[in-house]
Length: 79
Image (cartoon, rainbow, N blue to C red; front, top):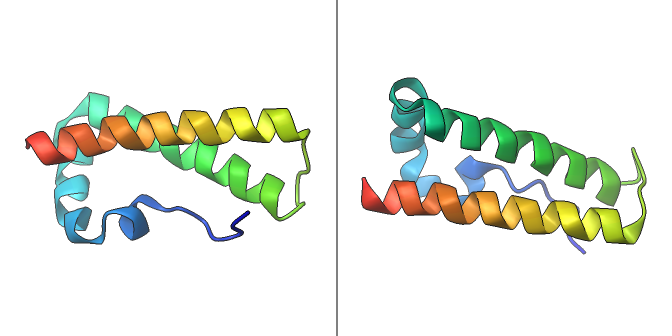
């Protein structure tokens, strides 16, 4: 289990500028990025026991985070 936040800028360091521009120009991308950020924070807070949760709930959040990351990557790689 990792206690490192999985920020999008760390996940896709070569796409930081592209993500910034897409957040400003593409409402769908902005919603995905915001949802990723929110779920990522929840996972990180659970992993660090700031806001502990049941393991199954934490696993489900990780799955949602991975699905959002896949969607975000799909948009980044197509642009």
